[in-house]
Image (cartoon, rainbow, N blue to C red; front, side):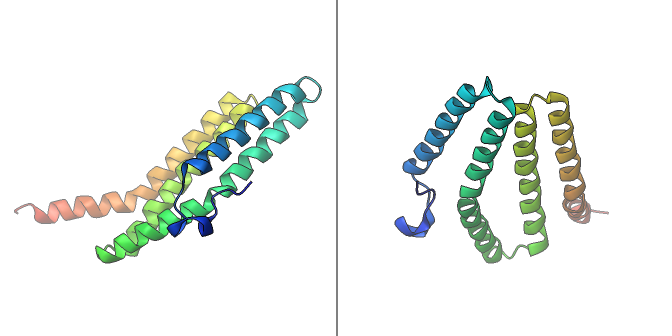
Length: 145
């Protein structure tokens, strides 16, 4: 399988073939997990985990393309890089927390998955405080005194 290869399309843009390959892999692994689960639940869990990580890693190239595009837009708009970096970190935290929570939920640990999601939300809030502070200060500076 040739996931997300940037040399086959201009600029590495995703195509319908990419999602078909990802969904196909997901369906095949899901069926294998169902078959193996009765004999070896631990192996079935590991199979699902490895497939999830593989899918995530194949998408990194596409994520890099989006990040580069956002950086170019921010540079052209004269936005300070600290804000862009913070927003990208927030998005990363959200994706990683969701990914981890889904894996833990697949293992049957719903309570732990909820705690991972809560942790992600708290970290996002902490990361957003400096941006919120700048927004509030900017609004207050525009108000007549």
